[in-house]
Length: 106
Image (cartoon, rainbow, N blue to C red):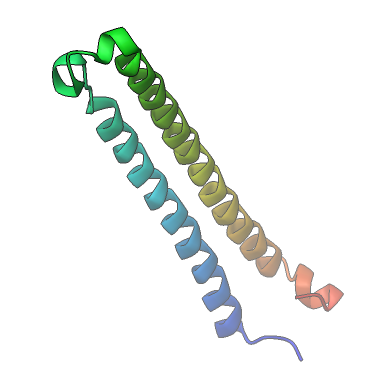
């Protein structure tokens, strides 16, 4: 049995809302990346021996890696959100053109 017009509209709306959530989480990851970038710790905050033992340098490398991963996650989340919203738009266009009804595929 074919879905009703209301069911189709609800499904398309749910896809768009899902895409928006992914994009909102991308923004959150971008904020986390900025916060991680601001967490600078040097020898004074770590200890007097931090420079001698390489701890300050190791911390800096770890911080850079965390910032990079959060930025990449943000880009990927944004791409997923965009893809989901594009799928909703495509499905809506197909529905408008009656492609699904003509083929009996939902």
